[in-house]
Image (tube, rainbow, N blue to C red; front, top):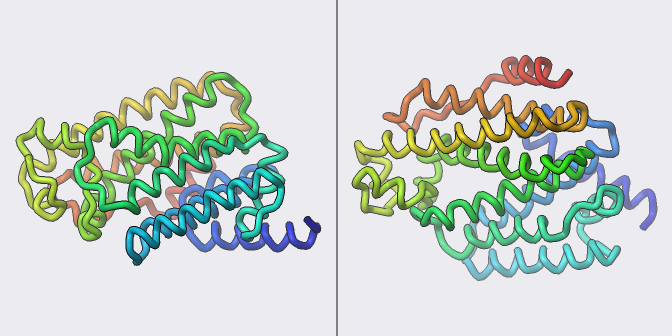
Length: 282
């Protein structure tokens, strides 16, 4: 593949990442350029398959589009990708040994969303979903960061859970509007909620207790990630440390708001994210 084709592909994924305004950008910008470009490509891949699962279309159409991405991953690892994002992944796959199975795991997770709206999954399915859509991204990321410690893999999984649990708590109302309910069935039933109808659960006065339980699980995974982070070299893990701090602050804000009005979206101002990045990035 020509240098021009690679450069165009890198421009594409950089635009996808920067246009998103994602909190992940705060950590990416601290990486050396080749590793930063790798993270842009990983992010663009995740964004594109996530859009397939979330946007309009029948389940069959979504599954066909995700199957096409499986074929593209095959071509990527054969050295002959076609899409701009996969072309941008070509060098990172080679230089940083990005695991093929983790790209496929992300697609597996998106297929769970695409087949039907997820509604109160069992705890095992909930954990599997989080492993696929968040843990897999974490594993790809620590490879791109250059983390080589044995603890880096488990750190990626712990942080993936912590971030995904927090996202689910933040987005309960938004997901309910899409017909989805990611809160585990066992937590709902623990507090007497038998319904799996997202809007009905959103109105249930027992919902705050469920959210507190999931927040406690998130706290456990944050603590485990922090413990593992301390055993990894500081330099390569700067982006992961920043994201951990940003999302830990977000969970704190959610807890401070309380769980009575889930329609009130909580986010962190840019200035606060910048402060967190500066504090944890150097």
